Image 1 (spheres, helix red, strand yellow):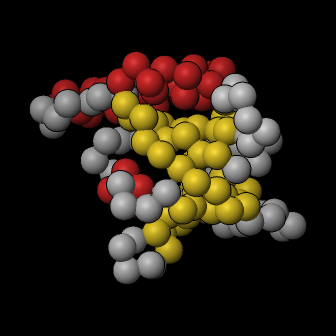
Image 2 (spheres, one colour):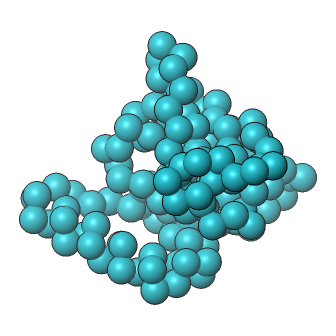
Image 3 (cartoon, rainbow, N blue to C red):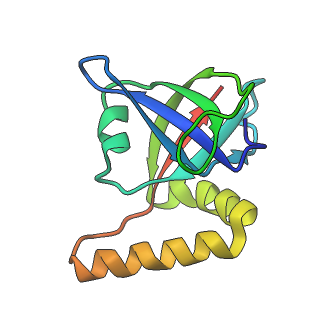
Length: 130
């Protein structure tokens, strides 16, 4: 799943409605189990963060930048949880390694936007286990 440039990340509202969003994703080191782990960064107040607070059930599928599933891309069931502050370090590093300058530019723009809007911009990430 981490070989794709974009992955369609689907999380669920309390009502059970599926909400799919394309995200960048990068593989993380194993936590000692046979499961694979990947991560991506998000805004702490995003809809994805709100949905993950009540259910860890998610799906992943390879997609294009607009969220259209790629032909033959399999849907994978997974679980996800939020990480904040220092726990988000490995996620930031993995995304930075995979996406390089593009990630740094997006991260800079997010930080500037947070300052202009006078909102805190704490590091928040999602770790997905599949």
